[in-house]
Length: 154
Image 1 (spheres, helix red, strand yellow):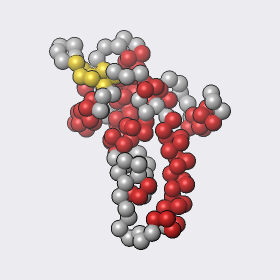
Image 2 (cartoon, rainbow, N blue to C red):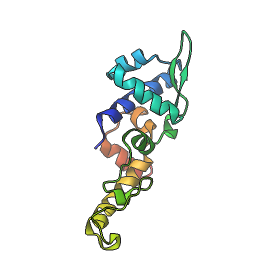
Image 3 (cartoon, one colour):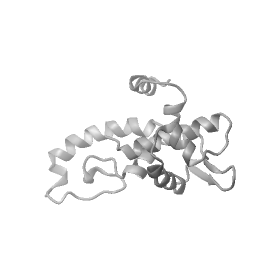
Image 4 (tube, helix red, strand yellow):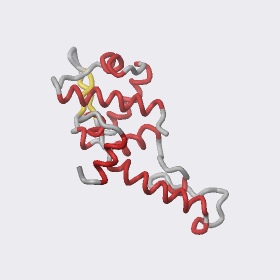
């Protein structure tokens, strides 16, 4: 499950992507908050994290604000999820980047929890690693359409 913070981040990025496709001007934080329905006080911290990760830039000055500096198709949702929410694995022993051995597990190789959740997680990763910000902004799509498009090469 994605957090509310992640939803705010995605909504803000969708607005920045829409502006990039339109006039391409920087958006002030107040504009992003209004357009995305996101509380400004949360958005400031979120945008700072995303800026520090290199997906957006801040422009100083009277006409300053935030701009998306990467193409939406170059912004992987899985990277954003890890950036904003941390590890996405259901168990710490399945995490690629934040691996930790489970304290209560004497044998990872024989652990049924790890085996079953590992299979589910691998399937989830195949899908989530294929999604980008473009999937949220290029066309209004249902989850089924996105999955079908990935499955059939659309």
